[in-house]
Amino acid sequence: MPASPLRLLLMIMLSVFLLIMIQVNLLVIAFDKLGLSPSSGLLLIFSALLGSSINLPLAKFPAEKVELPPGMPGLFQYPPRYTGWTILAVNVGGCIIPLVFSLYLVFHTALPLTDIMTAIFIVSMASYLISRPVPGLGVMMPILAAPLIAAITAVLINSDNSAPLAYIGGTMGVLIGADLMRLHEMKTLGAPMASIGGAGTFDGIFLTGIVAVLLA
Image 1 (spheres, rainbow, N blue to C red):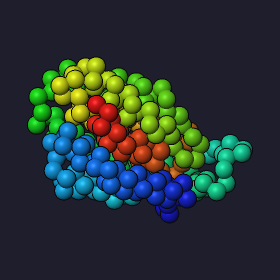
Image 2 (image 1 turned 45 degrees about the vertical axis):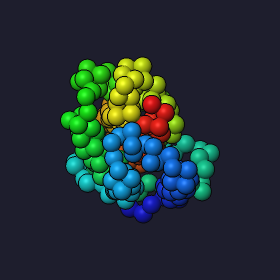
Image 3 (image 1 turned 90 degrees about the vertical axis):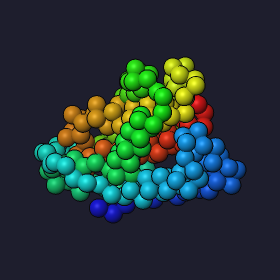
């Protein structure tokens, strides 16, 4: 499926955001907080960006045909190809890579399991409440909400290890709250594909992995 103009615009904005952060050395600070070298950190980030275009199909289920709400911006609206089915997929850059790195942090930091579960629970509930299903597109959510919530939660729970806790709680919280907890709504959106960690939640997951760490 071709990329929508909105997705292309999002990727351009994220690229500009990264270039600015590189220029002012903010990425180096974030990498250091997570125990990564600059080269390892850049590899993680660009792997996530490249992986955002890869969706691995998991299942297919019947989907309802829906009418797009009137007045949606035509320039950034990609008309869904309704086929009567929705493909459930997992996004490499927005799900698999953050999940693998979160597991790495769990086993290589001194974070208590109770702190991790508490942070994930809080961000999950918040992500569920602030996200919304959009007919024809999927689940969307404000870009900076999750990073702020994850950072504040991590500092309050464990200030000594707030950076890795912010990353784990933020990325996993968005995946659970904005994606997994809304899977039952996917068949009512008329979207040709429902991607866990993709589409409208990728930007939230991606920025959470950077901004939340910087704020924590």
